[in-house]
Picture (cartoon, rainbow, N blue to C red):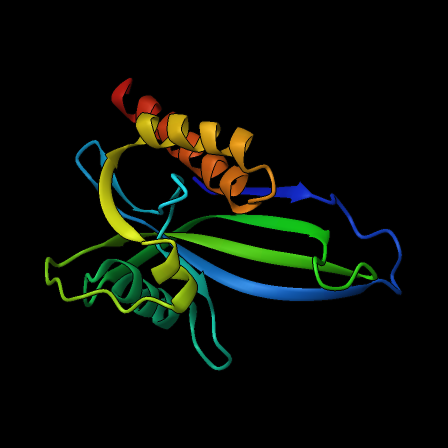
Length: 174
């Protein structure tokens, strides 16, 4: 099971086009029929994760991001289950294409919980880790997409949530 999808600009037509790339990793953490997501005061749900720093592996970045955003320490990173590529005109320079490559990995938590270590914007948005039903997260994110269409991470997260829902449904029918 591995998905890959492109959201936004489907292909870069002009080879001379300037493209800014960002690599990110996101954790898929399931426990029973619940998934651990980060809820913001904007009302949306996101997968724990974020940007990969220079000289940092995907595993190192994911362990760090899970600890920062959820407080769970020493996460165990498993297999990659998919990638979402987002391309759009850069919000700071209309002559540049911004491409975010988000890699999703199955992760497990050994149970040790510390405190969150949030960035300023995450503090402003009151990031809170929550165990939630996938269907509830999808429904809430769909409402938020209508209210905040500029928040381009919501379609990405909902795409992955819907993929997971399909996979879980298929596993129950086996």
